[in-house]
Structure formats: structure tokens, C-alpha cells
Length: 367
Ligand code: NDP
Ligand code: ZN
Image (cartoon, rainbow, N blue to C red):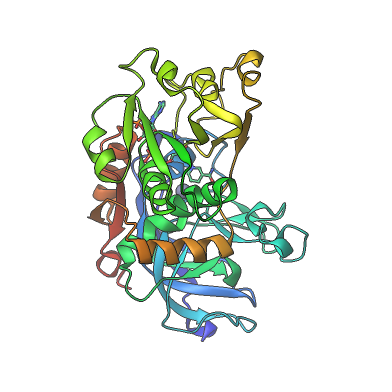
């Protein structure tokens, strides 16, 4: 079946950061299919904040001409490599922000494959084995190692599953690593209500935690409460908010894509003893978190981070999402040059509630 996979895929690509919001439809040579690879005919793809950081070269330069981003990919399996055991042609699957690893190191063997030193990200990542620079899901097809492909529950729509592949998994992993799968009686703070944050509110709620959300303004207040938050703080409008929350948080999860108005000392101040502040938000490399060393002192708190999640966690996340009705709030938009432009621009302007999902792949690519 691998021989039927076209040698060239189609996708919406950008070649320089000045044109970050002007992807053009291109054809590009696909990566060589490895024995454990799954080839997917894409049906939809979410727009993650990381797509913007990458296209604007806020973390690192683009690693190739005609870079295609997108790592909230869902579709049907169209072919599998010789050694694939976990998937069959036709199955509904998704891929998140990572797509391969060494399979052999201590991390890969202990459900931390997303932290493998040889891990290959889904786009803009140099795959040492094949020499290929990976291409994302604003495209006709995707290829990923089966350990990075997740089966989508039968009753879950493709468009709902899309944002769970990156945003959902990225917030679910630190929630359960810090709180366990039953967070009853615990309180979680969620900072930054975008694609990641709005799913963090819902997953924390589904695990039984009490949720306090932090946003720069009050414009998302009603929506955050309706997602399951118990209270809401508009940090830009409520000076001294931290005095009201002393000794409150078992976990503070930062989902903000920038550092504007993010006063780290205030957040560390309100942790319970030994609790963690974990940042999944990845602001541009030129930015930094400002912090007085004294901030840690009062409660023995820690500052940490978290990157994606394991396949094991992805499976658990999908199960809980299906069972508890955790659902991204999405705006569907047909994939095309104009609509890539519109969605990237609007996400950059904070004008999306709360995730764009590209659809209409059949029409765009003649899939
Ligand atoms: P979104 O653009 O959907 O949301 C980001 C949110 O951050 C906004 O809704 C806003 O929340 C806040 N925000 C936006 N701009 C600024 C700014 N300049 N200063 C402070 N806060 C800001 O992005 P995503 O949710 O998709 O991604 C969030 C971050 O997480 C990104 O940096 C992304 O790259 C990163 N990420 C990290 C992963 C990991 O594994 N660690 C995986 C995936 C993404 P509000 O209006 O409520 O203040
Ligand atoms: Zn992402």
C-alpha cells in the first residue's frame, strides 16, 4: 500500500518570516516512509499558537524553503509501513506536535518519548535518519511514526479531535503529572485563555479540580466561567489580586504565548507550600520571565515547564474528553491561501474564540 502514496504532497507554505501570514499552495517531495510510519490523508488541522511563533521565526529560523506548519492533524490512515502493528488502513487518527523518536532510549522506553533527545517534531524539524525537514498539516497528507499517532474515539468528530492533538495533550500532561487523575479538592490556576488555556480549564474541571482563570482583561470572563472555571481574575484590571488568593493553588499552569503583564512573583506568591508553577506557554526567545529570588522563599514553590505529552497520556486524555465532554471551542474555516491568511492574522490579533480548525481538505487538495 505504501507504493500507492504519491511522491509529492500539497500544502500551504511560507518561505520567509516577512510572509508569515501569506502561505502559498505548493507541492513538495514527501519524506521517505519508514517501517514504523503511518501515512495519513489529512481531513482537518487546528491552528496552534506555535504555528505563529514558527512562521514569525520567534524561536528559531525556518529550516527549509516552503515550510508547511500545522500540528493538530486528523485524518484517515491511507498506508502503513511494513512494521506497523498499531494501525490499519482507513482508521481515524491524529498526530500532534511530535512525530518520531529513537524508540530506544530510557525516555522512549518509559512513556517520555516526547522528551527523547532524538525526537523529530511534526514540522520545521530536521530528521537525522532521512535528512528530511518535516512538514506540517496544512497539507494533503502527513507521515508519522505509529508511536506518535493517536486513534480518535469513534464518537468524536474530527474537528473536535484536532485541537486535542497538541493543545489538549500539552495541558493534560502537566495537570495529571502534578495533580494525579483525581484532582478533587485541589485548586488550579490557568493563565492565558487561548487554545491551550480554554482546554486546560475544561480538563482541570473534568479531573475534579477547582479552577481559577487569569486573563489580561475581563473580556473572556463569561466564557471562561461557562467552560467550568469557578472564578476569574482580570490581571490587568485588578491590581493586588494576589492578596486575595494567598495559599490557594496546588498548581499554576501558564498557557500564555507572551509575557506582557505576566508578573511571575504574584503567581508564585499564591502557591500552597511545595506547589509548582508550570509554564507550557512558550513566548518568543527574546523574552524572559522576570523574577525576584525572594518570590520562591515564602512557600517553597517551584518553577517548571512541560512539553507536549506521551502517547499513553494522549490515550487517557482522549478517553476523558469523550467521557466528560471536553470539547474545544472552534471556528471552522476552509483551508485556502486566503483563509490561511485570515486565520493566522486573526489568531495573531487574539481574535479567535478559541481555536481555528482548517477543514475542506478534499476541495483544496483534490484528496
Ligand atoms: P493562543 O494564541 O490561542 O493563546 C495564547 C493566549 O496567551 C491568549 O489567548 C492570551 O490570553 C495570552 N497572550 C497572547 N499574547 C500575549 C502577550 N503578548 N502577553 C501575555 N499573554 C498573551 O495560543 P495557544 O494557546 O495555541 O498557545 C499558547 C502558548 O503555548 C504558545 O506560546 C505556544 O507556542 C505554546 N505551546 C507550548 C507547547 C508545549 O508543549 N509547551 C505546545 C503547544 C503550544 P489572555 O487574553 O487570556 O491573556
Ligand atoms: Zn501546538
